[in-house]
Image (tube, rainbow, N blue to C red; front, side):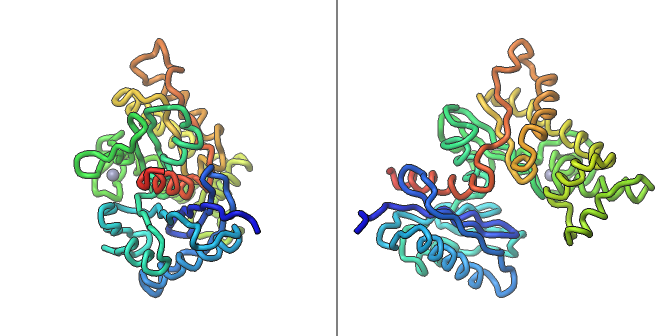
Length: 327
Ligand SMILES: [Zn+2]
């Protein structure tokens, strides 16, 4: 008989997939399982799927439910963290879904719910690129641009839970329209959605590019980060131009953030950063250093890609659960 292992399960609930990760009290990963996010059938069908995925992950890890201390979920959108309710997640088609109560009923273990960007940064801060830094800013570039802040080793959520929205920093007054209704936000200039809009516009105006061909070949309707990486590998001129413009804006954004908050470390996460690492963040850092006020000591702040890859959210959710439990 092996001695019972104490175990935590972190869940990263995204618009396309759900990832569950079981780890022991040293954060050693015991098992990881993935499933597609179901949008049809309403929230309860997806919540049942999440519970099933947690069960499968525990099975693979060889841990019985009695040894699970907590299941902790990073979910998109604003969250009422006191009640564990997802206020609004357009990616999932959810509105006011009591995720914690429903999962707790299915799994019968303590359940925590937190915003996905916050847990992503908590993971990088405790176990990845931000390790050893007390003040860390996370910038997550995907279909949108999310942000999170850690000051003095604690998540900073602001007076009304709205802190960290770096994606809606206006970088170009009267620039392109953002999903939030304003113009010229970082998200409207440098998110994956903005890059796709610019690539399509360039092709429409007659520029030569293989991006649409690559998308067709990979059977993708959207310009995912794997498409971006494939196009850059082929030296696609339009993709290169669009990417370096996005990197420029992200560099200006990072400099604004550093000038305002003076953190030790800025971590770039999300699919593109995970895949391209320093090929993505290097040029961002170069631009940021040019815009820093304290130019005498630009290297005093680290501007780096995340280290935990796809596992950042799930591991961060576990870090959060342990903090809340005080263990
Ligand atoms: Zn905006």
